Amino acid sequence: MLHAERQAAMIWEGNLVQGKGKISLGSKTVEQLPMTWAARTERPGGKTSPEELLAATHAGCYAMALALTPAEAGKQPERLQVNAVCILEEVAGKPRITRMDLEVRGKVPGLDTADFEQAAQQAEQLCPVSNALRNNVVIQLNAHLES
Image 1 (cartoon, helix red, strand yellow):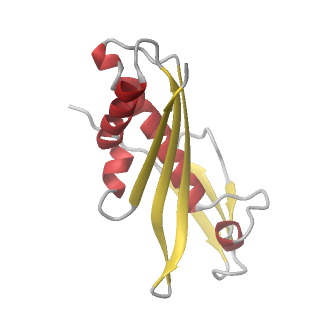
Image 2 (tube, helix red, strand yellow):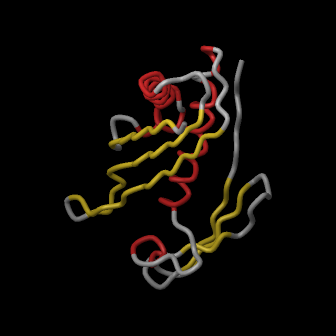
């Protein structure tokens, strides 16, 4: 039975607008990523945001799901490039993540465009991050097969 737990920790100092934080990953692969409200809503300026981290998480998870779906049909992907954009907007006066745009380009020998698009849709349904966001965040998927 699959069971995994992963950790991250945030230390925040100050108020929301002038404050700053540092996030660390339990794996120690990345330690103390700086984060600010300005990085979240204005310009990153060398800092990250929850939305950027969520986009990275979704891109990675979706790529893994898409690596699986054509392989189940005997077609091994050579290369998948997934770009994710997490949209933060003001809704009813409050910040809200409203949409995640996934753009995938893939090279999968033996698949035609229709088969690739079907595999991409299946992967989106399989992806645990997509499933966590579904019914709360619009997920827009665009898939392009490279020759």
